[in-house]
Length: 87
Image 1 (cartoon, rainbow, N blue to C red):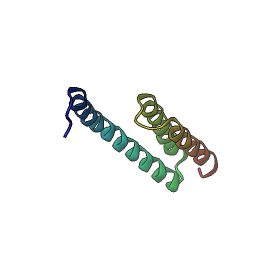
Image 2: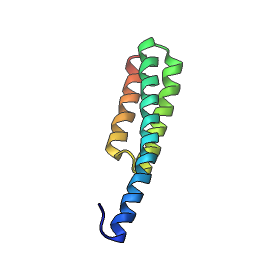
Image 3: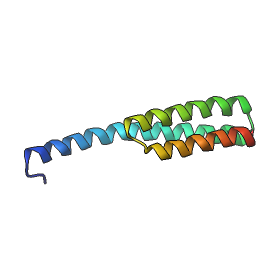
């Protein structure tokens, strides 16, 4: 258990941030799943729309520090590559 006031506050803050991060990461996983399903179906319009939404959400998560900027860049690259080649 935390001993100092600052450590107690850090525990509270960490718990608060974990809840925020969990909702964001869950949303990212859902968008990624929708994007993968659209590319597997071969529906170009739907894949493009879901890809844009997924890339945008990754940028926002990266900006808030939920996802590392290189991870967001990797995901956006994956979306761009998939929409150009698979669909």
